[in-house]
Image (cartoon, rainbow, N blue to C red; front, side, top):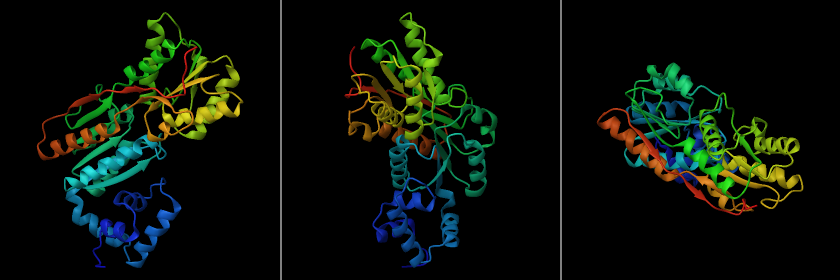
Length: 337
């Protein structure tokens, strides 16, 4: 194997995909121990060490596109990242993926990476508009913020591809209200820190208000977008509000965690408590009960974001705001009362 081996060489020899090798080399936690060990053996065998990685990045720095992912445990982003990597590679560019915690500062990280990597463009998966407002002016390359609308921002090099989270949150509550539910709990992110949670909750409030109802703030339970956090949130909420007949969870991961909590409380879904999720990740359609959810167009989101960014890299023509539609996917986790 030549000294200037590439990630594709490692993938071929280890038997894993290029995206899996990339995640291992970028220290992404969402990789099995078996994959990490197999890839590490190939790397060690051929002396693919940091110095050779640095040389490769130096050779390719003018073709780098950074993907900055906010949330290390976000299953919804996993499929999108993989599709983005494939598309970026097919266009002849090099995708470099970085992950940070949900409450991390993505703009600070991006500024550092822009100095070090000199990328042609950036894609953010998730982000805080407050962080963008404070620091994005220092980011020079064309950028796309995916999954969050940039309507309140005004940067010539910042486009966005997202759904309308207010409308989508409203559709979830409308669905439950149409089924006859009135005591509806909501599990979502911090309403102070999570812009997406703020938007989805605003949509929920609009739906209640449109029917002459007032949402009780005690029925909102904060959680991180993780199984265990949502599990604990659902247990806490149901212990305080045992008369709830439905839960809207702001992600499918949250919904699955909540369903497990409901089951452990010796209740049944949907007989005792209906649950609706958000995102439309694949696992929801194989869960028991099959999850009712607000589905985002993951493939379209990935493709549109990459195409828009590459268009602006090759021929800059200003920022665009693209809004995609969601669909309500009916499963078995919600019922009429």
